[in-house]
Length: 206
Length: 206
DNA sequence: AATTGTTTCAAACAATCGTATGACAGGATG
DNA sequence: CATCCTGTCATACGATTGTTTGAAACAATT
Image 1 (cartoon, rainbow over the protein chains, first blue to last red):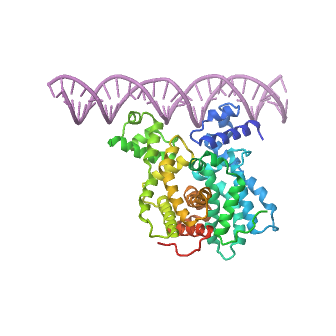
Image 2 (tube, rainbow over the protein chains, first blue to last red):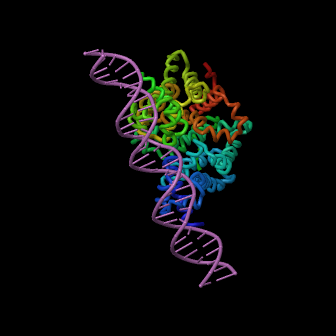
Image 3 (cartoon, each protein chain N blue to C red):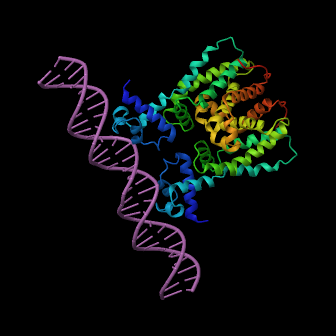
């Protein structure tokens, strides 16, 4: 792809994620991308379309989908749920991630613009289907509609640690916050959720 | 208090909550408050201090605290947890609320500015203490540090339905979304969480 | 009635915003 | 060589931003 255009997209994604749409200026984006001010309007027409393109490029959820299909059938539903939850935490809290992809995504999902619907259909719904497949094995007696709230309860626990990081940090203190790690958090949420579904707290580690 | 100043504060809170700090213009705020453009700088010095004042005035959590102390000791811990969760849902999803208080609050907690720390200490921590008191009775064997994750798991479930409303609406469809109500949601989260803590799914309604 | 301090007003300030323009460079095609 | 298309550049446009100004209006006190 065009070099300037992709540099522009990267810079835009990072700054949009950090400051939000309004606070991010076209000039700052171009400066970070080592591009001229007119480059945005040349390649994307206007600022809003640059934002939409940046959201579309933030396919952080797709990186999650790629890792999942490996455990086809040899794992128990409990182990698959554990993997699913741990993968969510890794995607959100890992320090080596391209960083702005997820942030821009969640910013869009909390305050939806025109790009939200596409994000949900392309990335969120496939992930929701995967979770529902796991819940299908864990709670055979439930109807389709009864499984949504359970999925929301699980995902809500995980997202809480990402969306409300500043609250957690202030509540439990910086020192205690730094002791949190992906493994411990995933283990807690898995144990909590499995118990909630009436599953024995047996071995769910892979 | 001064009339223009409080009208300015109300208008600012509403617009800040709706659009965010950057997208909200001083002129629009003054227009809604029927005040002159110079009124903001006269009463608050600058835009940022008006925002801080608006956040401070958004004491939505305090309205929750007022209702809680009624159940002193005559209710079971299960019933108290149910009330706590239902009260959270009512505060967040009720249509008759002053509307912008909570929105501004959560906006601040997700993307903290200088006003965040005060909000946490004044309103969030007292509420967290109340929840921890309930959990104290529900899980006697646990240490102080082990109770934080359980509280986060409960609050995370509730907040998910507020923060990610647009996702839910798109995932389950508008029709199914409109059937959701405070009672059903509170009942689900309560049942889910009590089961997760190993409590029998007995009668928790007041 | 005169004076003081407080509040409101229209108007203007400099700065920054997103966007548009026309010129210039490079390579491919005829 | 001439032509066309694409991409980059400096510059400037009009609009909007937060903030300031100085005068006018008001209320209260002396």
